[in-house]
Length: 303
Length: 215
Image 1 (cartoon, chains in turn yellow, blue):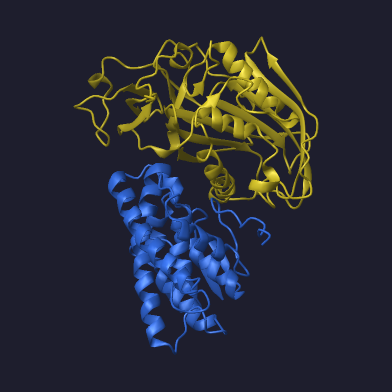
Image 2: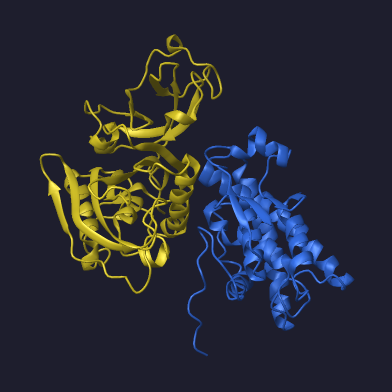
């Protein structure tokens, strides 16, 4: 009988920064509880938007008022891209950069945080895949007969320790809520973190700039995540809720696909699943995870 | 003019979009940020529906809440074929209303499980799933016996009724709450028939029927 690992023993994953929740969606100084890597953790954001994270404890329960003095063993905590981040291990100093986030004229939103019954790596792979656009996001991100995934480039950057897929192009009937019709859209994908990916796509408003859409996945367990969807887009027309609705519609279409993946954890053995040419970025992603020696949320290559 | 206060990922809102598509009824949509914004609990929305629930529909001066009630209203008023809610067939109306109440039970169980898993609602997930399986078993048997008698739909008619629309969304979205439909073959066949009704539209999480199989 297969038993599932109850706590995470993977040092790569333990030492990473992980997102916990959108800062704008929590009341100041009120304790919020969530789960990270099968452990209960709590967090709070104070009036100055400073963030605090700790392993959940009796005596400071969700909804309670937070006092910094009440917790003597805080976990590492950061505020980045509108979210609270923490680590259960010894993290690097900084979270991966997204320079566009500093541009003042962009709309920065959490489109939603959704629970999904899937492993984080399966969800990242789906995010990288363009082949499903016409079939899953019909009339929005793709439409038949425009189904071909044209040749694109993938590199694993050693300096930055991230995957970069460039020269991705796809015909999209409605690339964003700001679109006024179909267009050939250019995509750049970055995977700067095993459980996070950042997508750049042509802005319908300004041909010299790109919209940024990121998924930050919070692993609740090996086969269950909270997906935080960060938007950092150019849009001077639509209300926040309209921009969010567009992104939620797309994510809602992906959800049943993600939850029906079998096995739920991502197999890293190159022979486990047969890729096609369009899966170049997924092949690089699996190889990158293997090279890191990742074990959590994946089925490692048997020795 | 009809206005629907709507959230894309709500199965209850989808029921109304679906019926209006079947009937070819025009309407405008006012998006409500149900999640994460909880706009259905905002003051302006509570004035429309003090229960703080979606959907709400406005048709000129009439303001209605509750998906099942609105299905009845729309069909009774706009269905020129008089099939979806046949006003002159008391036995069938009784049957339809019996299954509209059953649909509310599906919302209270299968939809609750989905809200727990996807939107982190603090519900008793095991109770919600067990409740949904109990209802699905009853629906599956009902549909299976119907098929033996040559009946394709939930109620005793040669055509679908609003009962089919009311039960469809949260059955179809059940896997998002960890409720598999694997053990309910008659439900799966019925879902496929609903998807083949002329004018069928999808919502996020519901896919169109595959190409019809050759006989």
